[in-house]
Image 1 (tube, one colour):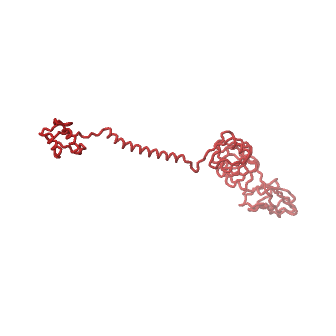
Image 2: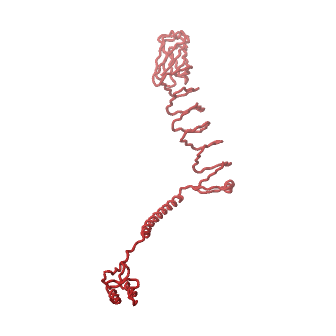
Length: 347
């Protein structure tokens, strides 16, 4: 066979079984035949870079190996995707954290700002009327403070610790919500809306005025007690005399005293003494009419006690009303005699 002829036929055979697909090699058939033709240019019929096909159809071509993908490149492609997602999450988280930090550090309207006072500013306070800071700022004095002059607090005064006042304390009003201990207190006008519990003795120099009911579970000691009405639910125990004072009732002479007879009275509506002096020819009847200075609510109980045997010998009796009583005798009294009676009137 003529090698040159066989080379020419191989170049034109586009249907050879050994033809490699363009997709597998990435080259066209014409581009692959060019090196084979160049290798046959020698006279000895030898090919450069190829072998002679036994059938005379040209040099046999080796099939191209499949293209291998580098595993590192495949891993790098997947790693880039995950890395991008992770970076995105970190960026979003950092942005949220920064926004929250800025918001928390932003001062609010009602926030109180602290400001330290220098020595120069303190001297200005001592020498002049200087306004330092604003209402939202706090003045903090670490050391003790002594104010030689007056101190005016225009708003509320809050004391976190104990409050000691060496001199007098003048307050227009005082509201105490918790327990209060007062050793020596002078109040011009003290109003207690709730219960008043006094553990020790209560000394009142100008008296006590109670408009409502009062309950005393212990003993009450008083030098003088003046009351309009005294109601006792229990027994009345008196260890001293009873003095029944009050205005003296009126007295009028009756016909039983006789001619020139007289009557007199000493005491009060509650108790007293009646003195009778008979004149000439006293008849039986009433000696005197006693009129109370204050009428009783009900007809009182009048107890009459004769003084001396002369009064006891009379057949005396009384007629009583809420306005007074009348002392009478059923028999005639002796003429020119003096006798008397004591009385007690109780409602």
